[in-house]
Image (cartoon, rainbow, N blue to C red; front, side):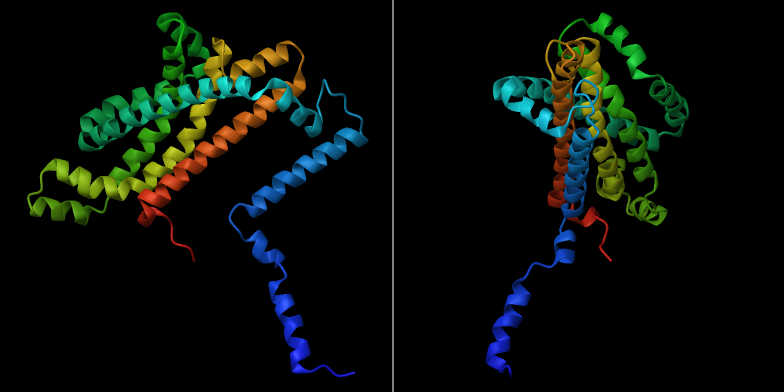
Amino acid sequence: MTLSIEDAAPRGQAAARRPDLRRMLAAPGAAALLAILGTVALWELAARVLGIPGYLLPAPSAIFATFPSIGAARWGSHVWATLRVALTGFGLAIAIAVPLAVALVRSPVLNRTLYPLLVIVQSTPVVAIAPIIIVVLGAGDAPRIVITTLICFFPLVVSTATGLAATPPELIELSKSLRAPPIREITQIRLPFAVPYIFSALKISVTLSVIGAVVAEFCASDAGVGYFIQFSTSMFKLPQAWAGLFVLAAMSLALFQAVVLAQRLLFPWSLPRKP
């Protein structure tokens, strides 16, 4: 039996349309998604085969079953309470860290005096000083925002100052030879060069903002995902607590991807070149 060119062409077109596994895995996020799904599947299998009690490690099916029972309105109020504090503290950290980094680079005296104090503040566990902050500032969002800002602050200062200081000296000398004012040196030379450093710090700090908000909710709060997790564990409702952890992970991932998207849209030239 022989095949003509007309018979072989449809088969070749069908093979070309067949999805390529390697091409699918090369898609952005595909490998990570498969890894997450595989981990969840192994977790479910282990919980069923080994008979792990639900009060020790609930199966993913039991965790996901708690989402409808809690309700969208209740989830929305807790997520908004945490997200509000996280974003406010994150924005406040940016507003303080970037000008302070500029001041540290511009003034060697200020660098020698303030930088050790910043290291001391960062070395102090925020969990230890969180109750003190809450006592001083009282109830409400203010102490939680301060705690979140303290956690997000240090990576932004260090990375921004590093990027500003790493500006090629020939560019600085060129600006001085052209008698450019210091403000133009900062805004048109140093800050554009430091954009990749700043966004690297933003990606770290935006995930730390969620951690800071949750730490603050553990200390004193009546709403938020951290409060929900603490309440669920105190009532021995482990599936609900794990559901809260999944929500926090999704929130951190969404905020991280938002920063990545902002860099791609606003500063595409700062992204590393693909080989």
